[in-house]
Length: 325
Image (tube, rainbow, N blue to C red; front, side):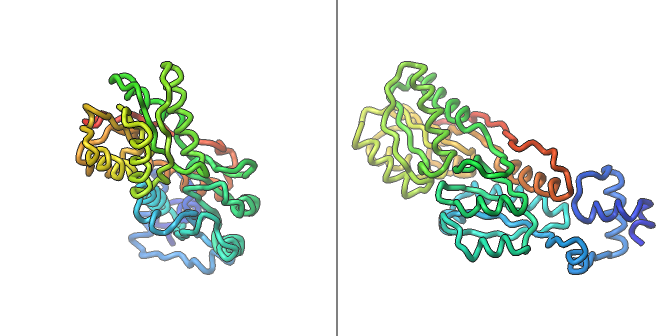
């Protein structure tokens, strides 16, 4: 009935309903219009039995629940994934785990409840996810922190992004530049440290203190105090996430440092946190919503049979200059 109303084949209707990108936009629009006019609701249970698919995708975040819901980066990723899945027949299962997903979660993922997995915030302790990559398609938001995982990756060039941030500090005259970074168990943190160091070395500058702020507000407060205790002469700080700057910048001001005249600050993400800082934040923008959308698009495409997708997709970053630097 839908195919007749839309003037297409039943196979085309099936592809549109299942979220396949291999349909001409005009045909897809005709199918969606026919579905709306006829009030058609696909029988998910029958289709799942026939195709042996659940039509569900899991977003796994091996993180503390408080950190996951307190960081707008994750909200942006979820928004991107949801916006893409909303155009398909797939639903999203959100699974927030400890830094090492439990056996119960692994049994659920491997038991046919989902067709594919998206992972954000991967740690070196997340060895369980290596098993899942051999069972179903898996895509990581950010390079996985362990080697040998058969998966797709959507990332930005964190080395280049951190280098851009640090170069901004050097260009405005900073000579003693510290860094507040993420945990060493995460590849993004290691890459951002590398970019920071590369620019300092290229300019003949001795690195200032580099302290782990755990990608949290409280961690950044502690790290900023430690940086200043170690070296009160710093005149620039690269903070590896905007969220951490909301902890670091008040510590600087409480210690009597003016931003940016005494200490310039550059963050990373260009999240809403950049606009709530007392001093508007210069930061490296990464397209978090688009990254989430791309992760979902890859999973849908692979599940539709397109295995020619590139294994790694690198998305662009850019420096957004505001008053802090």
